Image 1 (tube, rainbow, N blue to C red):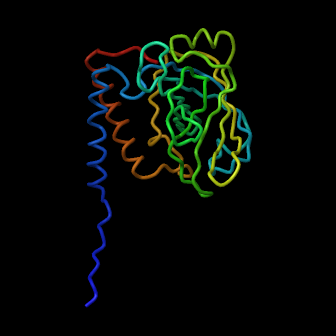
Image 2 (spheres, helix red, strand yellow):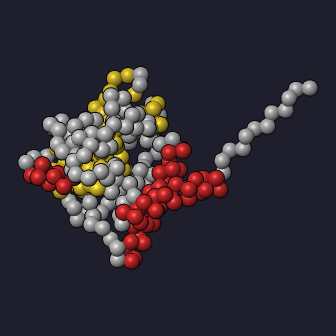
Image 3 (spheres, rainbow, N blue to C red):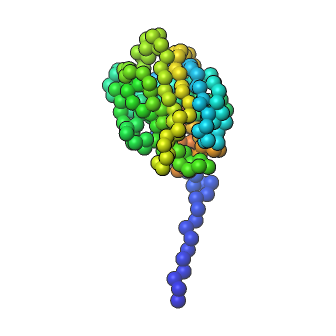
Length: 240
């Protein structure tokens, strides 16, 4: 008699909701302890421009069609280590759409985190590839400028001497990297408090893996809920 095979049930909405809640608990706790963002709490909001080269064929008009867009971005320290100590640094960009692209400092390959000593000391990556109609793609940003400190408090002085440039590429395992755009970071905007969320502010042509979407959805929701509670009680940290 042939052995009977029972298909494993696919996760349903209830399972996804439990994942969201589980991911949100530590994020809410950390945000409450920090009286601010749970993720990348120390940083600086900046304004700039994104000059799109065209031809990346990602299926996202704002990244495929040549043109220039005004954007806001945030440079931050992932571990919130003090001063200029090396840290996993972050570069978050809000594109028209809105579309949020979140990158972290990486090593020689785009899927490995690497602490850096300065905000322009090495490349940034999406770390986990996006699923697109043309296969898996990492978004990687290469800074053009010489290394700066990893202390966000020093960034306004750096920007006072001139903009910081980051060249964005679409990186695939089986072909040469394709230049997507150049991000020019120009002006400190510490008064802005933009809540970046790569799940809420996404594009269907740049799809994150399902497990990552669920973890991020819960974590960012938990962080926002804790920050909203801080506002209600008057315990609000300065934006940045």
